[in-house]
Amino acid sequence: SIDRKKFFKTKIEKSETRQEDEYNPALLIGSLGHNLLLEPENFDSKFYMSTCTNPPTANMLVFTESLYKHTVSNMDENGIVTEEFSNLVDLAYIDSGYKISKEKVLENFTKPNKNNGETPEMYYNQLREARSRNLQICCVDDITIAEKAVNLVLHDEFTGPIFEEREGCEYFNEQQIEGFTVEGLEMKAMLDRIVVDHNNKTIQIYDLKFVYDVVNFKREYWLKKQAYIQGYIYWKAL
Image (cartoon, one colour):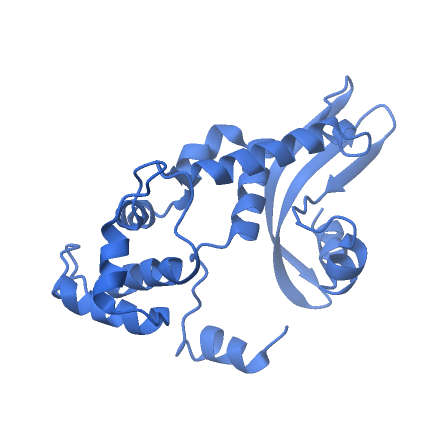
């Protein structure tokens, strides 16, 4: 909706690929929050728990992600890397935008953190393992933040009751609906939580949004991103 040319190239022509799986803390915390609230039993089938406290930052994160990208693009059908590691490093160094020497970057890549002994190389190896299994990698700090957010949701006077199970009600989480149309367009939707209240004869749908700026949620998310359209489509799906 923001960039039609980008949409055409990625979705229609397929001449460009989107880096949707690159580390994005806001999206990751949202995904973790959804999982912990609605389907914690499916955590292991969606996420890979890294032993790292947190991912690399700034240019090192770009370098690590780029190194992964070039590693994967130079694998054969058996998962064997067909390019020399030094050549992959050269490509990742160019992508990273570092101003320091390539040798210094590589030194920092393998250098243990003095506080926890972790290295960006550890994260890179676990990144390869996670994505080869189609899992989203998360670090210890990511889980901590998501758990705090979930705790706030469950104990808030407005959102808490949504997750309290009452007698006479049925609850359905993460319901994927397909095969319905809106204004002639075929659609699909994932409804986060549905509450069927047999006592009051009502059915209520809830869609969870994890955002960093709660104060400006209505203006900066609900209105700016036209999320009310999503709400209408979910109602039609139900």
